[in-house]
Picture 1 (cartoon, rainbow, N blue to C red):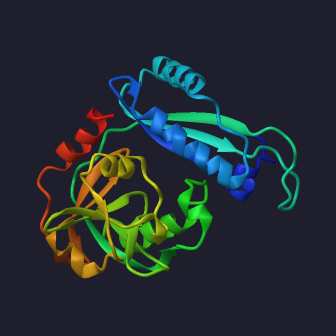
Picture 2: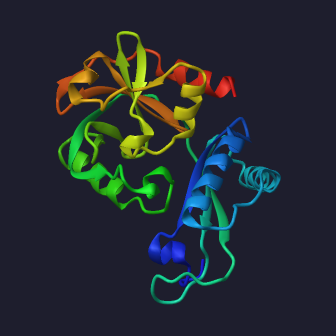
Length: 250
């Protein structure tokens, strides 16, 4: 990548992380739909079409021999000079394929005191390259002997994990924070809502509501929260069953 790329210098771009299982990218059309919405928000040209992406993905899978992994699709504004003003040059696409397996093991978490999700920023709804706040919150958790951090919303209540949507168990099913909280519109979150397995919470989710159990879900797994700041929580017993059901119904 050229050193003048705005994705490298300014985090001015978007990415999608797509599960590869059995040598096939999963939910590629759904990822592309979110990618296009993000490009519109950022004023970027539309990303490559589905047919082109599928051909490139299968080519990468065949050449690498990786049949189970994470496929990262990157879309930057392209080259730019010094400063913030975008150039009129073309956008830049590249992909990366890494071996990986879906994660379903339980994690211990804390609520970050360093970072919060910005409920008032339109960028919170886009999967941009700018993951500094998530990196910092994850480091905060690890330094405290935990594995993951939950982020609160500037609008109040819990919002998400550093790289996953939050699902919280309540007596009648599952809740997830509303998009107005600033959480990313995750692909698996959307699938769960479409299938009626999850509802958007009618009010901000507070820490005390995790007492019935909670999950962190994304395209690469579904992990129960086993402890919050050292306090044990009930572990939902079949996270993989729930997660695979979302793939199977697509």
